Length: 240
Image (cartoon, one colour):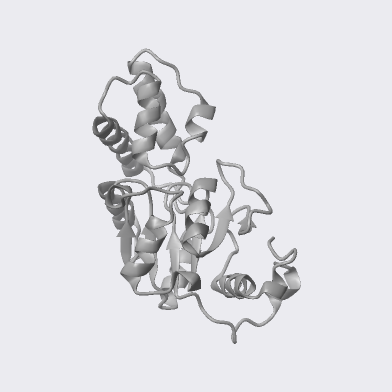
């Protein structure tokens, strides 16, 4: 999106029917907490775990992550691994909830405008609820968690389920993600996607709007992003 189009008045542009949010790495920077848990867990079972190993799991469902940890020597069942990592991360969050830049401000603005919101995460429900309840305002209308879907991201099911629960058209929704896996899920579902680069490298030409962070991103800009996605003539070179 060009600066001139962003600066133009957006009062006549449609609001998104809903804004659908990924959690880990998008709203809160919990990825280092997950990776520390993985390092400790693998080490307890005599193995080693690298930053690259952890980065490869960003955006994946927890059951997939558990199987990868088993391949690295963790001699526990999938659910045991998931519960252990979730407990570890929740302990860290109790000490400090690490907001991503701009996420709280944009979420507040979206809520103040009366736009429905959903948290769409591959963390399990108790973790998703824990983070949602730690936010100091009513941030989400519904939560879709990893243990409530048959198919994890990058499958479109999580985002389709969120839109159905909110009673909105997914094609009129904006999804905000930080990983290639999550973006694939959102776009396959039909949402207009914003990729906020953080731990995982993102393409600047991947069919979504690329941002270095959400700092300074406003509802005004979301209107323009949605409008551009719906206007084929604006798509040539239109993804920033």
